[in-house]
Image (tube, rainbow, N blue to C red; front, side, top):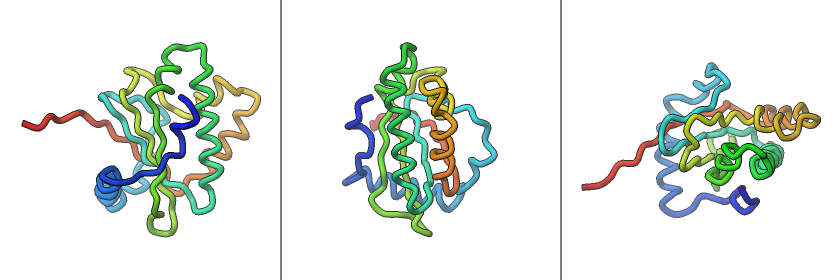
Length: 156
């Protein structure tokens, strides 16, 4: 994954899609992911991760995710490099209620059976920095994450 993939902004039709999805998620399942286990394995072609970040914590979150990108890019593990090649991070242009920032990871195609758990990725690549990186990453969250599996639907 090259640095150019991280920090892109959502625009156009993608913004409408995200706004609709966020509205549904924000109203019905916000914070529900706090009880989820740490595994981040997707079972579909495409995965989405909605990250709700505290106001003012965007730079810390983006910095941690940049390190994730670097970790995946230099990994000796082919599966990790494939994860990096198909992982894109977007930031919504407008904040949500309470000035919460929304970051969306789009994983397409998903690497079958691969775990996308950020702390493990950071620990594999940066074991001496993982505590600091994890604190920045975890400390940035407002209401955690929501994971979604998406399957393509072909129009008739």
